[in-house]
Length: 253
Ligand SMILES: [Zn+2]
Image (cartoon, rainbow, N blue to C red):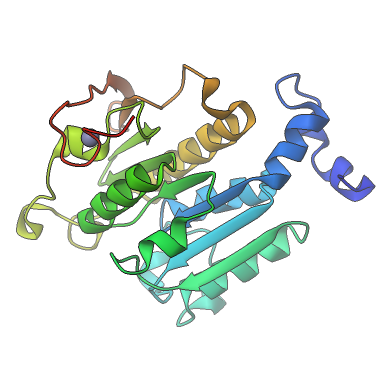
């Protein structure tokens, strides 16, 4: 199933006992949807694509702006003004022509979310707003799609993995989106570009291991929130607890 060219390309994966040829074939069959080709999505997409995740869908409604290039490393200067979904797909394809990449120029909403996320083995959420994070949570829980959600701001970042019916969901932890005026964005508060790189890379690393081991893996980011404070270079992981009265996952088993 893997061609000689692919076996050579992925040889450093295949050398690992945890991967081998069978694991690489599993990655090739995997379907991952990435919401947001931004600071988190860029490194996540590059590593997922390079690792040979066979089917990647990229959902983004923005265009590439000059201010993005400080951290959104999947784009080049010449991509300014292009749709992010299209430019990121094209750049990822030039890194690895052996995988299927679908760019979707759309903003995730209640009407399109089910169609855009269905069929995914895993969803990575790296948008810049809480509405999308809560929407991703609600749809993934309902459709029983595992997901890894993350955020960064200034020198800090967080990442959390959720297996529906098993782990606490985003709403178990945060309940409702905060009022927009209470949430600073990267556009007004700033962010260290490599901080987004760290968190997006953690999302990719966890994704690859999750796809290799299905949901049997008990360690890792699922059922936890990892908080990173790069000013002190501190990593802290907190176990999440399911709420029986959670309006989204309370009756999901
Ligand atoms: Zn919940």
